[in-house]
Image 1 (spheres, rainbow, N blue to C red):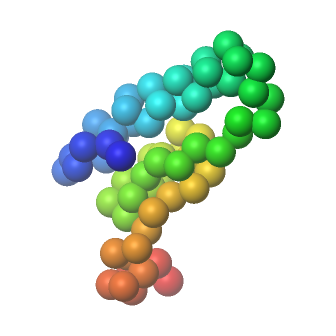
Image 2: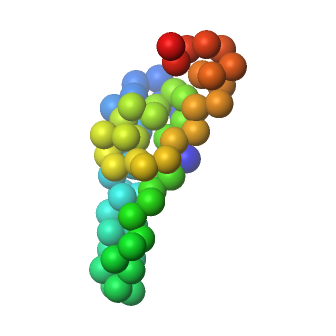
Image 3: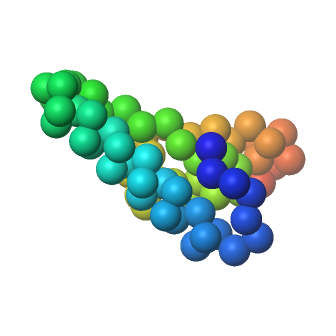
Length: 68
């Protein structure tokens, strides 16, 4: 989970670093099927998806009707 930032672009380095860590661990340990990456929440899921998220948590958006 990235820190809450008013400016979404400030979360990008956090998501990019997590994707890099996942990729490095997959290479290092031969985990070719290690493809899932859960990151991003309602306030920053767009950036997380752009940086490789395969799972996001958007619970508060659903309950507030923001995803229509």
